[in-house]
Length: 180
Image (cartoon, rainbow, N blue to C red; front, side, top):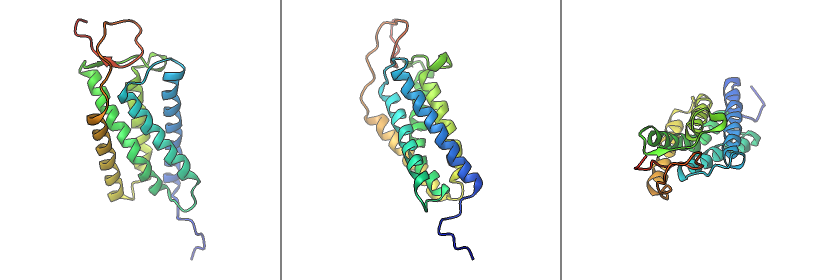
């Protein structure tokens, strides 16, 4: 019989949590660089995505230091903001792809800022799902909560900036100008 008071952490789930933490740090850093380094302005959808990434980062960072919290539970907790950010990002990219919004280029010009954020959010989800795989009902609940929160914010959020004549370069996601 084991005398270890800590719950068993499988190596794969622990590695997945570390990977999620690294992805969240990179995504948060990239998001902040878009504003602080590239002088872009975060539209409401960009800001929601940033807040969710920072929320997932905070949960992961705090959870890593808590004794007694196993990796699968930590994965489930971080899934709520991670999936909310992913859901907002999906909607944001949909608006961009359907030419409702035009968004500025992201870091190093590899896609737009929302496309880069969405890719980071998708990369964050993968290790979190791996970590939480043994908790099926809580994982499903976390995904429902995340999508519900994202839907509530999208439906109740402030409007995007008004359409303006194209200028190059622009510094915020905005509705496509009708005359363009």
